[in-house]
Figure 1 (tube, helix red, strand yellow):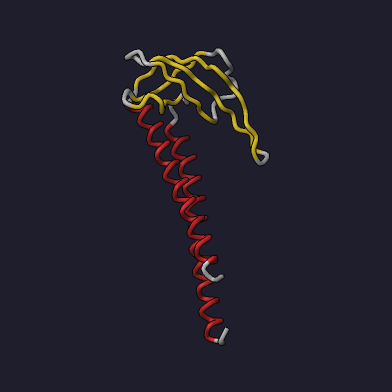
Figure 2 (cartoon, rainbow, N blue to C red):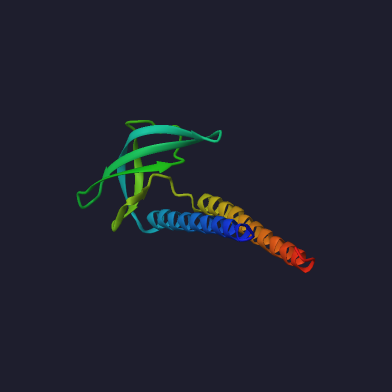
Length: 148
């Protein structure tokens, strides 16, 4: 039974670490597309929203043709609400990874601030899990001293 107080927080730390890794990878892809990528016009094929836990997220599905003639379709979250089906937008992409394109307008400060806030939250979450495990360990050690 005592092991659950270590296994569950370790699992939660693993999930938070995975989320942080995915966030950093996507931020790096977007930043690289803005700084070193190519631009092309894309058509918005679909715009829709999803609602989860009273939070609404705007999604867009875009399609474009790379400069070497490949057709690429990708979905992106948190796009502008004013973009609707049929609109033409500018897309930034890296030639070797066009499926990781972005239609977000270059805004490095906003990207850094958003990523930083999420990473800070995940760091506090991980610290809380570690503190919880230390407190539980101390409590179980103290109970062991009393013969429990």
